[in-house]
Length: 80
Image (cartoon, rainbow, N blue to C red; front, top):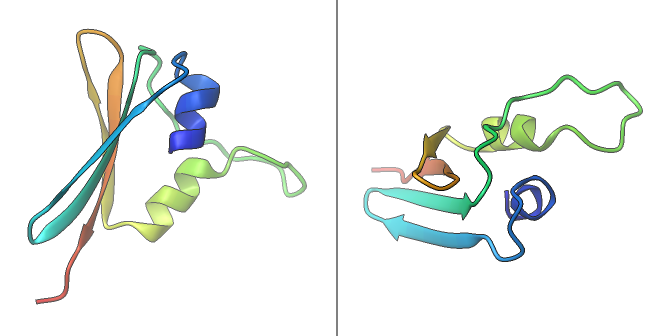
């Protein structure tokens, strides 16, 4: 997510923060209004799988538009 914020987020220094409650929530904020959208890259494509990885490795993810830019986040639940 940080690499995507650098590449697509129009900001040289994305803000990264997390919270730790019963769930680990990691957020990456950038200055771009463009919302991320999963892609379907070709078999030999060298990019385009970032959100597929986030979706496959986390319990949930999403985007919160801000006045300036957006925050992309994901969550991991801890076992009870």
